[in-house]
Image (tube, rainbow, N blue to C red; front, side):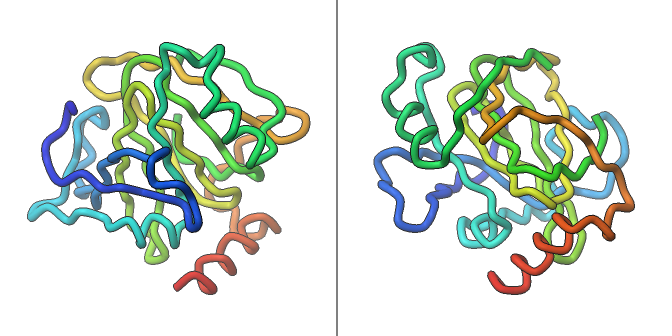
Length: 185
């Protein structure tokens, strides 16, 4: 893996562990220099599996070289009702009103999500990673120093993309997500 530090296994509750692999996540430092750098807090503060799960973040490790005919991807799509997809080749912090799903086919970068105390957690995503970010959660994405990512987006229903930027506390989906955080604490 490109970054050093402890690797974490994020497995959705009740899921088959064989379908999941390691992902790294940590609290981000406060520096505002080049966002493509890892920005690990010093001392390092890894984020546990349970902590990510409480935030609603799920992760799978797949083989992106066979995404066109991958039974594991098809199983995830069926289980989670992702009936539409497209491929993007990569903005600032946003709040989607839908579950955001990305499957990295090439390259790498960082998703950042805010915890319940509004601190940034950085999640390294690399080739083969599939990640979901819950609706109503503030998050952002940045490339790493490779400056390249190619990813598949998965959707339920009709694909939409409408970013809501801060502040967005009055949106119903944000209120639902905050309630989810309270219940999962």
